[in-house]
Amino acid sequence: MDMLVRKLENFIGVQTLELRELILTSIGATQKQTLTAAEAACYLGIAKSTLYKMVMRGDIAYYKVSGGQKFVGGKEKARTGGKLFFAREDLDAWMRSNRVASKREIEEAAQSESLKKTRR
Image (cartoon, rainbow, N blue to C red):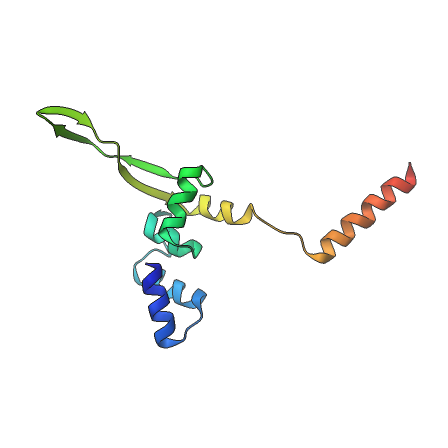
C-alpha cells in the first residue's frame, strides 16, 4: 500500500495526506471502525512492516482472528497465524499518546512551577 502511495504521489504530485485520504476513501476505509493491517498502516501513514513491528513489540492494540485448523501428517493442529484487525479508536489513541507540548505550554508549566516554589 505504501509503495502505491509513493508511486501515485510522485506521479500526480499530491500531498501525502490528501493522497492517503483519497486511497482510504476509495477502498471504503474512511467510514469503517475496524481496519485491516493494510488500511491501518495507510491510516497511520506508516509502512505495513512498521505496523507489524509495533504489534510484535506490543506498542499498539489489535484484534486477531484465529487461524482455524490445519492438518499436518494426518493430524489436526491449530494454526498459529491469523488475520489482524485494528480499531480506529485504538489507532487514534496511539497517535495521541505521543504528544509533544508546545513551547508556550512548556513556558506556562515552568512559570506555574516557579510560582509554586516561591509560595513555599
